[in-house]
Image (cartoon, rainbow, N blue to C red; front, side, top):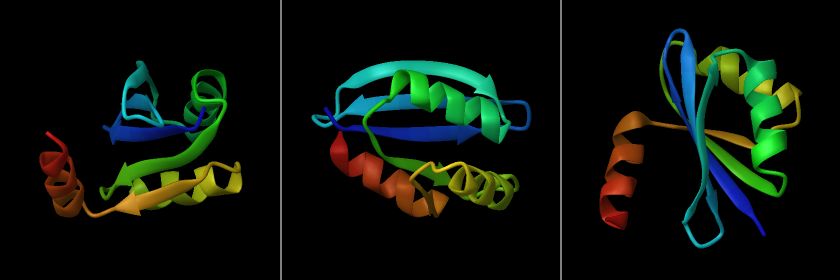
Length: 90
């Protein structure tokens, strides 16, 4: 079963939301805002990971490139576009 994930990044912790291919929540949790910790959580809770969404922000460039180097299929989303897209799903 394919999984998608989204990050809500803050300075110290990042909230992780994992959804299945039907959009149903599989797992939610928080990890330190460190690439290795985030990648480990995704490997554990989203073994069939297809895509991870990361909103733009001050940590976004560092996290994007670090996670990409760790093999995480990540995309960076403009915060305004991400908010508009989630509003359409309600």
